[in-house]
Image (cartoon, rainbow, N blue to C red; front, side):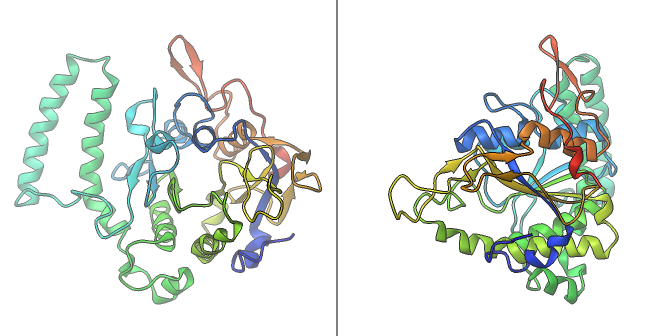
Length: 352
């Protein structure tokens, strides 16, 4: 199994990865393709895959959101990529921005916890009376629910993101300096800590919609971007494995599309958008380790065998998490919607 020289750390865990080399998407633009990879819709905003999974599986820890996104900058398509759209608002992703103040207003402002609980008790009773008069207002119900989650987050979120509780050996594994509060390595370690505390779906985004992997000018720009993520994602896989968590945790690494194997100008160092074939990988959570599925043609222009459309990718992820993509539906605007719409097949060849 070949691995690019850009990922020397990832090369050491390749036997834990299940690589799909025959991915296909519907669109060649960033906005639409990012929306499609997250929502299964390239034309309109729909609930994010994280929102669907939160809706399908519920929450394990009521003091933390079931769907969290750790990203220094918004991706293409912005917050729509972690939105809940027509699903209840409690299933939308909670965005954390790495830094010393990752979750603003997380500290209580009341002089004491007793006073805060009295205030919140009064607010809760008032909200319930208000809701009883508007029983069909899902947005209001979601907002009330968010208040309850926010109170729980005050107790648990600061501890979950406090990396001073980690051993020096773990920090070294990820390449994190003591006191560091940002960077992709920080995101990965916080993700592991959130997973330990019952957060169902955690999305990590390394860069936003600028200064990213969009190498139209020169593919050499991928070098520092790869270096930024290589050690961190490798450490996450190793850390989960050492703790016995990898079998129950599905790690998915993907992009919205690939790059062309050519440029219209001879000897140009850049590459263009290419949705006809690209690669993604998964690890843990019931997939075959050390396995490659599908392939492109010899030039990397189109799928040669075992095509996996984004809808198939989504159907397989849901299956691995115990959800039937054809049964996970929500009634909206007169019909049943689902993440895979009327498409999708489970890629059973990659199942362990």
